[in-house]
Image 1: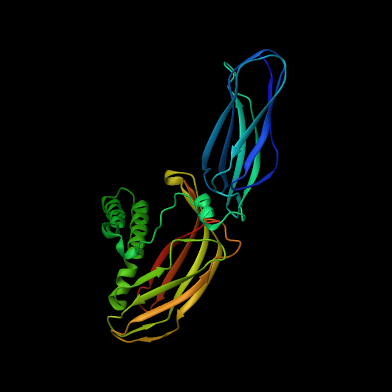
Image 2: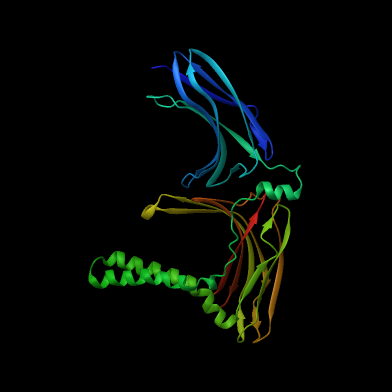
Amino acid sequence: MSKCDITVTAEKTHYKIGDTVTGEVKVQIDKECKCDGLTIEKYWQTHGKGNRSRGCHDTETLFSGVWQPGAYAYPFSFKLEEGPLSYHGHILNIDWYLKAKADIPWSLDPSGEVDFILEKNDEVDSDERDYLYRNSLDKKQVSINDKGWWKLFPLIFVIIGITFVYTGESFFIGTIFSIVGSIIFYKMIQSSLAERKLGEVTCTVDKEDYFPGDYFNATIKFTPRDKINIHTITAKLSGEEISVSGSGTNKTTHRHRFFEETMELLQKGELSKNFPVNRKCQFMIPENAPASFEASDNDIKWSVIFEVDIPRWPDWYNDISIRVLN
């Protein structure tokens, strides 16, 4: 069996969106060898606390045929037309790779790999930046109070738990199901209960997409149905890494909040019945903000979190996702 060594080299270690990454694949053969295909692949991959996500595959075939003993070099190039940008965080990392692999019949396929850094490009105009950096994130500006029949879903856990307890199947599992289901159900109806006093609450942000350094307004509006005391009303700009490890019953969600800024919209006091409340504040996206990212089991999420803290009554809460382009 012949020995086939593969090495991948890139011209540079750092590239920007819109650049072309170039390099070559070097192959060293010690005896005649048939190759059904030597390919080079460009892709990104996550690593950290969560399951690995991978995407943006772009493959080029460099050679197919018979190698004689010797050394060979095959140049390649890829246009870097889209993100995500390289990212190294607390529980989530995103890296780019160039991987060459030779399809050798009746043998383990030899391969070689090199990584590179993909950075933002400040030289392109805003319209082109918007096109280059935008990915398939969907805006998630749905109020907790608009979940409809999903509010009843946690009750299934409660019913299952009670059934387990009363039938003697498993007191421990039944208790856990009942407690978890009750907590989830309360969280889902919490804001609905708060609106019995607050009235219908509307919270908005100026738009969906922002670049680092952009300013935007966050607004909350409601008209109390009755006289009510509140402790505080706040809006919080949050940046968070979210990674999921494992699957099924062994699934674990890891979170790390890398940015947080809280604005107080209204201090402790009494609100009058039928007197409209309209509060606004302004946030700035940090200059070094990482771009929003969404993949299977791994996310970089930016959001504005509104909260109305009501003494001795369920608090009102809502989370509006925004998208940071970079």
